[in-house]
Length: 373
Image (cartoon, rainbow, N blue to C red):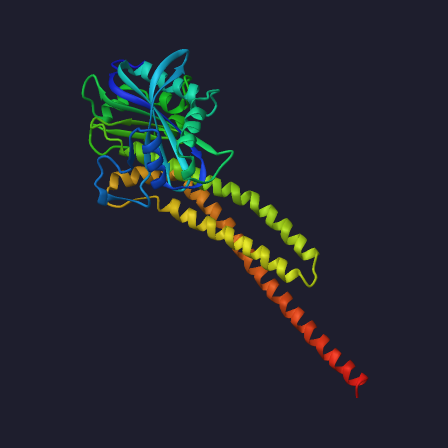
């Protein structure tokens, strides 16, 4: 504990769990189903304090209130407010919000780490599965081509809205140690590791601060704005969706190679049809993945808010979304090249069949002329 550490007067711990629940979500139908069956609040997403012209949503996500939930944190039952944000490209981002009042920084940091241990991906908890089952039970008809074994991501955001005394970002970094809450480690870290954890930090006003890492973030926001947290959730949703397509193409490429080899080995008069069928399948896959990756890329465009754009760009880079996107593009390029080769092969086989047919007709005509001079 550092000397003179401030006390957290008001804040919250936000645990996120994101699932790939379907190929696509009909948000309009989901909103209607939720209103009719659950009778709880829902809202189309927009950033709370950023002017609408400063950001552009491809399709604004839909937020549903899942009510209060009791969760166990280090043996104690605490109440958390649950919600889910639905993105049209098939991602459901669940959130558990634990409010905090009048708590020392040390205890606040321990609470954040304990929350991650108890509800993180490594935790043996069913709270997320219960929320997921509740969602599917209420709006299942809005999930187009639902996923049986959804891929998931998690993220933890520790937010302080107010300390016991006003403090600016520079003094805050001097008076508290953010490393334990950002790393989840109680043991001291090396200077290099500390530098890496604190590298991506941002401030717009003197008295606000955002520090983001791969799986956690700390936000000090006296105005209570949630825009940064919303942008971080969006970046995680984009990461998860691109991971899905990357893994899909990883599995598809070997199957494509096997089918191609099988088609080549069974070369006969029906080869052109097999080549054309395989080429159509690959073209359909390319079109489907390209359409949805384009939708993910355009899910959020930050235009005029320079600060939010910096946070968003840093999160996307830190989460390695551009790297995963590049990997997807490379695999799509391989499939496109294979499609072109198959299309050419099918055309070649058709030409060969036509040549054989012409030769057969000529031979038949010669035979007939000899038989009936």
